Image (cartoon, rainbow, N blue to C red):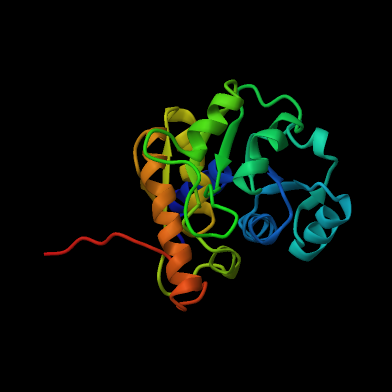
Length: 226
């Protein structure tokens, strides 16, 4: 017999994780986010420099996904995902509307033009530089170690870990909810300054996937031993 209390608890958990999410960028990652998060029950809006790309991504994702103008993406969104290259992230956020107080997920890795390394590191990170550019937003680093095919494919036999880092506790909790709702395992990686470690990990993942020939169906993870 179904437990009514458990059913109500599950419903409350679903409601807690259901959010209005705006995605900036409709490339591989932006499109994958739209598909995965719409399937998880979130209300998704997506924008892109070329409006037709946003419309295509929204149509392909199905579910409750709509394309909007870039300047309107922040309006009504509880959380924003910047799915652009690092070099374009600050400008994209600046053109998104009022992001004051918004939780913003930065997924970028500050790659050099030839993919040979990172352009930011040691004393800062892409996430910290974006936070400086938009001080009113609450930046959380996450998903920079997850390839688009892994993001889009849905939960599999192995629960992929997503490391996230930020300085605002409420923003981190919101991001944790998004990660869980998408079927991933959230791993709290500490303050935003720890993005200085997550971004080199993202670079290593890129090296293993592309240069070392392991493909894009991989993701790093930590496991308990002993």
